[in-house]
Image 1 (tube, helix red, strand yellow):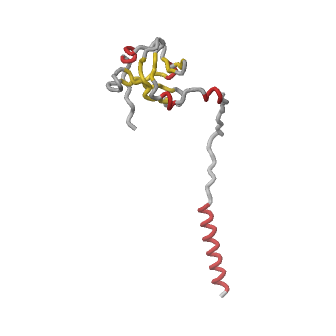
Image 2 (cartoon, rainbow, N blue to C red):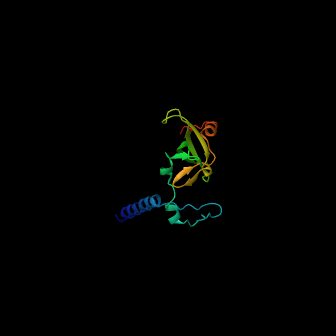
Image 3 (tube, one colour):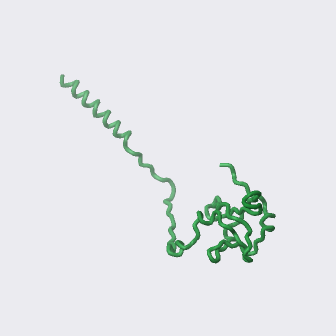
Length: 136
């Protein structure tokens, strides 16, 4: 009778080891050279006084003469992840008949807590190609 007990114990041990092996996480080694991330220190006090995207979107855009030339519809980060663009709604009246145009964000300046596009006119912005959002 001792032989079946030894076989049963061996079988249980095998099943337990197999279950443990399946449950263990696999260690995967990365291929190629190790990658590092370059971190840059940012002046957090200066950044805290800047414009958040949530505050920029919906803001009126003025030219340097103080005339309203459009409204920020959106801010888009380019595919490379480094170049922000601004989508402006121009023309129209009370949001009806607006045309969307897109420009590099660097063309906007902030002056006296206002968003300014120096040298811009409504007519020049209306002449830009119409921007349409891509379907998701």
